[in-house]
Length: 229
Image (tube, rainbow, N blue to C red):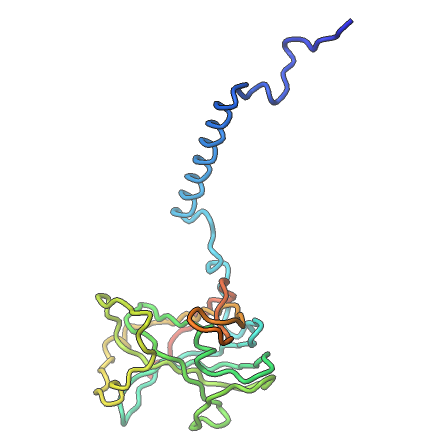
């Protein structure tokens, strides 16, 4: 004699319609709802970003495949004779590379942003504290150095669109009169340095390999600004 399950006993599959078309429609609706929920969470801050989790106190070593950086303090300085102002950060730096890397390489991995964002940092340059007047073209492998990281400052132009193909260095700026940034400097309160993970790979426009940022922010270090007041 054949035995049949009682009509009242329903398994999980009994809650879904038997029609394949209806099941497919339900699956599409569920996917759309899940996508909308994720979008709402992202817009309202429900999904915490990697940057928010990367807040790091000054003095904490930050390490990637390229270097270890320990940031100490930050200041804005103005050349008393030539004019022109710079963001200056003092730090300890040790390279992990087996070859020298340049300030331009390092500048792609460290991104400073002032708060409020009235001044824009330019290309990074490096000086060793043991030889502050010297020009550092290369950071040597496995060398622990006390360094000064400097970025020239200019006013933020909210109307200007950044051209990704524009040269990093404009020769005309050599002969331009330095801007008076005193009003903006007085209002700047802090700087946040974002340090990214580092990848050694070929670039987008050529096949030569060099250091560049990965997709992860390892640290966001916020420092008060010493303005010599």
